[in-house]
Image (cartoon, rainbow, N blue to C red; front, side):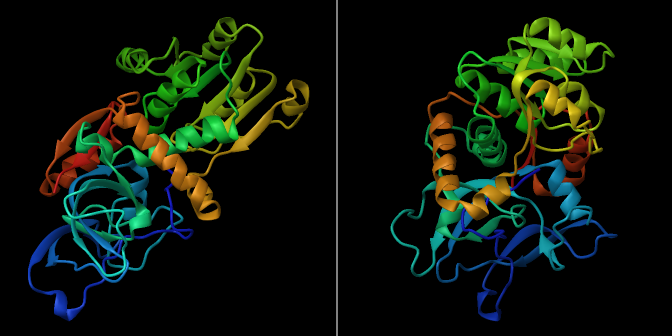
Length: 347
């Protein structure tokens, strides 16, 4: 899963401690050794340094990518030990020098970074935070930034999805797929969701999908073709593997296949002649690089996502919220492919 970065570099939430900060304590989930796994530590309370804001974290998301990072199975391998987790929301607790007037103590905020979110307190630069409206649950704000920014960036900026076009979403009940269904509808598209099982079918329809096909049916590709006369305009692919080739074949002339991730565990392969035959494009979607290379545009996109959430036009699906001490149960539920909705930790 891609990370949002609003500072121009891969953002990590600060977890270094100095001796003069040991006045009180906090808890955090840290990785000391990849073979040992996640450990709940009691550690000195962070103090915000110059240009930093301390957030009292009230909820943080647990994603499959977070688990890969925590297990050393992702391309990002932070120096050990480190606090895991990439998404959080809470309340501004303290201000460091030189942070400006954008945020004040007591403000509700959300943020995301490569690591550092599974903790009671996180210190981040103000550019790494987004305001959270008083009208929305803080738990939803904790899992809003990454999936919805990824989906909006992919559909509108990379896929140029137009009103009246047909959108096929693979993995439509995953966090990013769920966001793509909702945003596809807001952008005026007809949405076809590809999921497996009756519970996920129901969830996709509740998210706003117009049609649902069973991805476990060997004939699902032909079902999509029957539903999309003339072919699909945009594929939003979070799954990869064999589904990538099958979905690309559903595209109509001039279609765009957005490659977002590989939740299925395998990287799919395409025959290049298909692009010629369909006049179609394979387009990569990487919200992390977008944030690093175009921070101003990425920041504006995040503010737009927050505004849509504040107006109740988009809503993340939350399956469960557990205390930090129940991190083992939280990670097990994330790995369970039958889980529908996000799993949260609430420090």
